[in-house]
Image (cartoon, rainbow, N blue to C red; front, side, top):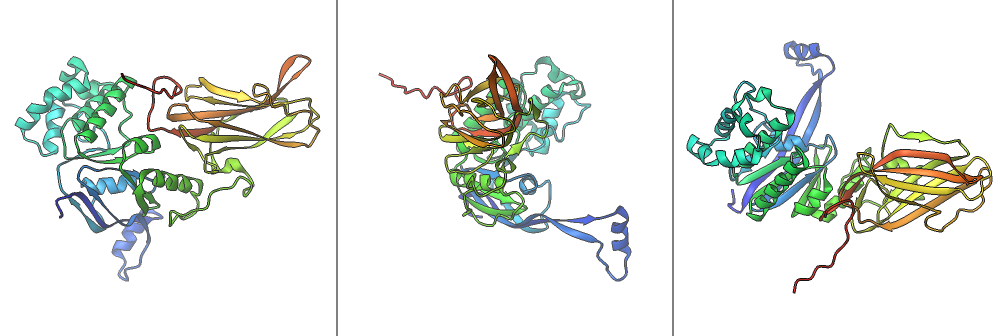
Length: 420
């Protein structure tokens, strides 16, 4: 293996046999005519890629794309059906935190157990124990059996052991956002230190903000196949297209943008909340809505710092004088982050007749911090001086805001900083 490479994945496939009934496995093994009772399922299908030393590479894909399978094969948890993996360096993998812990052992005993499983001598573990204990910060509980730990304490210790082993190759599978916000800050700081020190990192996550911030390049998987690999922003765009077309095979990165007048329902392309709270007196009905990025694509991912559009399509079931269309963006805890409506924006809809359909578009620059948010939509109005709700969809759709830089609070002030 060329010494400039940390990992080489060569034509790797992982095939599982799926049986309709448990008895079919026995029938197949005993059948003298070698009759086949199973179907083959390719968790991975002829996947190849290389990672150079010092690179931080992201792996993106929807559920069932094969991300976790390839990581388990790289770390030796699974064997490939075909192909092979070449590893040049000592690996630490944050896959299933706490795997290998013995619940009857104390925290200290589990540190040595895990270190031994990872191939370290007792002397090497001795030199890292203080760093592990300081990072985990669980106090004297480290001398108690881990079966007495809260889930948060258990995760802190498991993460501390995995990340303080000082590997040459770090593999992370959705494990950075563990514990409370203070512990998460320490996790991301440690990850930054790994990157700055030139470690090889393979990051698998659904957080496009993390991929955008940390990764030098990205590999995109879909349905067990490698779709493409390349520059981070280009691959994020490709992944967003795959999310929009999840029911179709995506075999190339050139994919037409979704135009808002080419589909029957915009909201079918969004991540909808199945438990949306819908209410109102029925004089109007929100029949469709869309979140559109700056490339005119409908989807649930928007990049911070860019312009995006929210569209609301309303059908009026009665004549109304000057209804108001509105949207609100909330965090997952339900706190209103921002929002506006046609009254605030001095853009009246005017008088509408029964059967009229109006589409209201709100275009704005996105300066909210990266993360997960919810959008509510509404159509209201004033009758005899009182606010009336014609139709409201509360927490209707989930959006992810991709950010390479998050500051304090809910939104970015976009400061210009000078130092004299």
